[in-house]
Image (cartoon, rainbow, N blue to C red; front, side):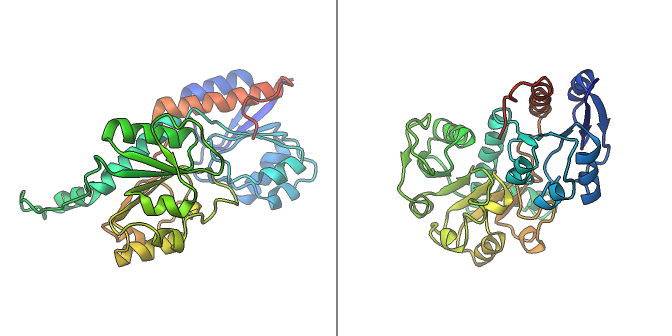
Length: 319
């Protein structure tokens, strides 16, 4: 008998077609995250679930369904901090994700935020749109030239290496990085420094590309931000709670760092009014993987994980 699959958000049509070819699909048309009752029902009423960011499968959700019908959460996305993976495992539920498919697109957004923050592009566009631009002059909106500057990468995995490659080969930046384990080959000339604080202090731009986990929550707090140079920029393309958002806002308001470029936020989709009011913050609506080809690749990978599991094989991307 064909297994049932719940897909929790609308996905690209080609992905839906592939899923429907393999499974008896129920598509939830709502673009907002599922409620508690919907998540409980998903585990109770379907063989497989394809969830995504915001569908917060906490330990409490798994506890509410002692004998779940669902045995796989085929997450759409590389980050899975919205799923308590340990609680899922204890409940007999496998969790998969979609690494690799997101690397280059997410790195592109990282480079864009580096440039936008350093060259004050968001601030400049707002000036033009508001009709307040009075014309070019030699000292208008002077930003940070990136050639010869130092990029600090926090988390030298696939995405960190892709950002480093763009910054070094494309912009002529030097690269230093912090990683929890030794990295033999960063893909470009790069120096692994001994501590997070050393990287924060050495870099003109710091980019965060660590995975979200309990260990990385508030990895960047007031002390780490205080170690940065006054002109330095902080860019986050990982997950919002890697930064203590309140500490970042205070530093930006006080001008203790040059600026920030953010694609993710601690309590998405909520973005604090104080952060939105800051000219030295570039704010994007979680665009890291927002390209059709990338979202299709993510979807096909999630479906392939589900197909492998349904056929009794080891899913390619179990977490």
